[in-house]
Image (tube, rainbow, N blue to C red):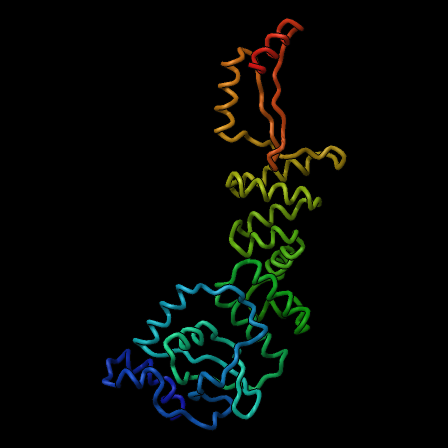
Length: 298
């Protein structure tokens, strides 16, 4: 109980407007040199290493800076979780944002739960904790589910109970990992959302999946528009798959109009998603063709 009060004191003192000094908030108070399993202890940051299997790969540096300012004012209210790996060394299980923020303001120690866990248990706890926080992107969640199923040997049904999701939801996330790498990168970078991806994955052709993904990026298609493109593709036979209709960008529409006015003839510009296409200029006989050639040469 004393260890717990001492670890949480930095946060509670600040909340209760205790007169504890700024130095105490920054971790200069004494820490327990012999942390006990299952308890909360003050552990030097220099003795804690990050979890190499951390499921979250991208951290918002600005939000971590805000967190560091909060810790500077209020202290660490929620301890991190670690496991002991040697006499004076610990490995982080959960709480990497708090650890990073504490390093920014150069805390000496940080309150931590000390857990006993093997590598598989550490991975499981880190993955489940991150999923439950709901701040991973859809691709990171999918990879976390995959790790839990494959590396921790957790059946989907059991996994669903642990993370509070049904089998269908977990399966939908796992299906994202079947998408082409280019689209997976787009998911990771939030260039499209999971609803877009779920519509795209219903198309068997990887090439068509990428074409629609590029159309989403170029024209900002809504989920409903993507679903309509997918439906049209699926309505066609495999030998006659049509590509989604591509609208000509406005600047080229303007140019097309200028050409029609200049030549006094019907002119059309057609292009595909990659920018390749043709300019069609119609004529009715050789006389008109000769006139067009003279205008083009001039």
